[in-house]
Amino acid sequence: MKQSKKFILLLPIFCLLFFTSGKAQKIWTLEDCILYAYENNINIQQQVLNTQYNDNLLKQSKINQLPNLNAGVNQNFLFGRSLDETTYRYTESQKTITSNVNVLSSVTLFQGLQQRHTIHQNEFNLLSSLQDLEKLKNDISMLLASGYLQILFNMELLEVAEIQHETTLQQVERTSKLVDAGSLARGSLLEIQAQAATEELNVIEAQNALDISYLTLTQMLDLDSVGDFSIEIPEFGDVARDPIHLTVEQVYREGLDVLPRIRSAELQVESAEKGLNIAKGGRSPSLTLRGSYASGYSDARQQLLGFDPELNPIWEDYPFWDQMKDNRNIALTFGLSIPIFNKTMISTNISNARLNVLNYELTLETTKMDLYKSIQQAYADAKAARRAYMATETALVSMEESFKYTEEKYEVGLVNTVDYNIEKTRLTNTQSDLLQSKYDYIFKMKVLDFYRGVPIRL
Image (cartoon, rainbow, N blue to C red):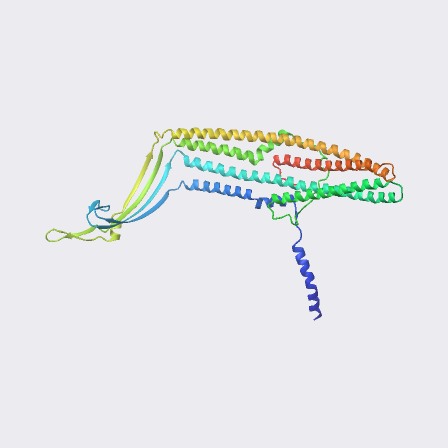
């Protein structure tokens, strides 16, 4: 009995622990965000459908090499004078019922290798669509990495604003005591309180920026709401400790081998070349093989049994299945079609196919040139970001020492509130600049890695 009462008392606690653990907040890493987008992004799903469509075209082009097979059945009701197809004689009766069945099959034996080139073209189109899918995934990964780093930047910016606000609040308390003791004028207190109010606004603005960056990332992920969405904070260490050993040419060479946008453009050129071969195949004769089986029945047809003593023919009804057996017809036909003049349609198709090849070759060259320019820009941005980070880091050390010295003089009344606030604002701006250059450098290096085909990781 006591154990039962104890269980009843502990049951609500167990339930609370169960539901609390079931609703534990998930911490999202950048990899989690990327994988979630791969599975749920609508643009990716549409590209997957496009890939499946091209896969169906490829399968169908292979199946098109097989013979086709079709069957037909006709039931005819003829009135008045009509042709009996089983005897090829006209009947004069008012009503005739006929039945026809047929089975037809044909296969193309040769058509200028157009079917084989079509298969190869569809293979290239499928591979190109797969590369487009990978390109789309890479682009989304870069967007997510940018949004993820923006959250981290705003987190640290909020932390800086809160620390600065807390420091100013401590100075407000010290200044208030000095004013009460008569060591400082009341104006100094009002000035430091105004600074505290300004920094409180900075905290609110930093929090708003952080909330907006969270909203932006969740919208990229197509999540219903921000809710309890939270990200993991990675350890970057000294991000600019090592110099950039990469060169533009090195990154470009690696990018040519691995980037989906380049491979997709190359496959489109190969697909266009197969399209040109298909167009040229239109000049070639085509050889086909056709086979057919047919039979028919007519109720107007009669079967001869014999002759009477006066040599008059004796007729009776011709049974359906007997007619179907006796009227069967099997045909095997080889057909050769030789193109002679088709209103220059074949020549026009070949000319257009050549232009299509040239167009895709130019597209490939443009894609390569754009890639090289993008890598040049990314490389220059990364070097500039690293220089800015290192310079700001050095400046921050000096600013911290300068502010510490100013703060000590302020506490003993050797520096007025205005000078103190100016120095503190300079320190805050330098800290913000350092954070900006830090995450700018991290992102620019991720862009370089992206062009080299390195998966995006933090």
